Amino acid sequence: MRNSLSLSSSVLALASLLLSIAVACIILEVRYYISSGCFYYWELNGTCSSKKAEGIYRQPVATGESDRCTILTLGGSTTYGLGLTYERTWPYLLQSELRRSCSGCGDLEVLNLGYLGGHLRQITSGLTNLPLTLVPSYHWTTRVESSRGVANFGVKDLGADLIILSPIINDTVPDYFLGEHWSTPVCSWLLRQGSLRALALTHYICEFNLEVRSKMSGDRDAERKFSVVEQFRRRLEDFVAAMRSIDALADVPLVLLSLPTLFTSSEKESDLQLAAGYLGSYDEKELQMQSRHYPTLLAEEHRVMQELASEHELSYLPLYKLFHEIPFRRRLANFSDSVHTSAEGSRLIAEKLLPEILPLVEKHCFNR
Image 1: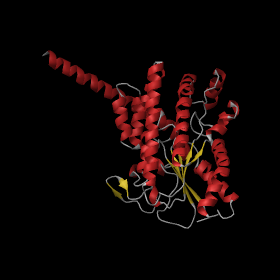
Image 2: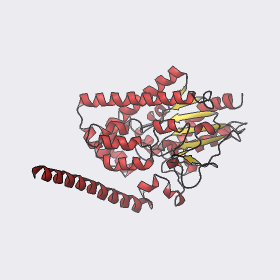
Image 3: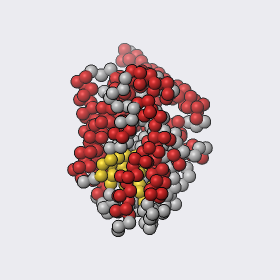
Image 4: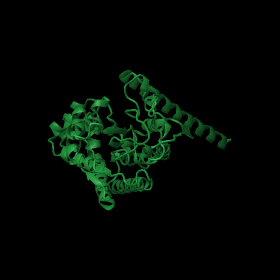
């Protein structure tokens, strides 16, 4: 009898938990719909691309070889240009700058393959087969066929002359903040599913771990950061190895790009107050948490990228340094939140990339 009551209590507790999560999801969805006119959970899966100009990928492309110089930009939502029109994303602006600066670059194209929540495991698998869940409702390419949920094409089929990889945040910050909490196995499983719909659920049920992680003791915090950074290193090494193992990509130059974020490790309390007022959607407590943890994790990302670039003889562009030299008040205008750049920030990225990318374009596209 007692075992029966205990089982009933456990089932009731689990049902209550699931109901609470469902109610929280509904509330978040309604709030997001009111502000944006679309549901977050479905928008991430591309369903809303018919209502809005944005899709999971920014532009349709065609597979196969072409005579034009093709640069592929791989990354997450900063490369995608979250909150920006396509013409204000840094890959599009870089294309415009290159076409203006190079007499033979009139037919050059820079394809924006950044996507929301993009992380290295997905980007690596996309070298051979892109998940169909990331193809919006309008056809991304002229050939969208599938087998077991993946497309029959990948980055290897797009005729790349140069690839720029810009991983940021998505491979360290989520893993770090998931922590050692009851929800960690659930969150980890959702992240491993490799779909943006799973990422949305992770956002809903695991977000509160930010507060848990912010209170972690110093020793455990350092241990967790080391583990997360080493995992980032392995994922980046896996990407390089996978790319070099594919005939169509083995000789394509790879550029590792360290994109900027708003915070360094030197912000004062007055800077956080200014940011909270300027950004609007953040409270000061959340910004304090981000300014305390993000710079350390991102500095480790940048260090790993620089080390691997040296080991594998790749180009490495520490673009974040140029932004961090800008005084905070002026730097703030280049960001729409603590991670994503504004239209002005995207313009500055393209402007600073031009002198670094142009010699690579001239060498690998026009001296073949």
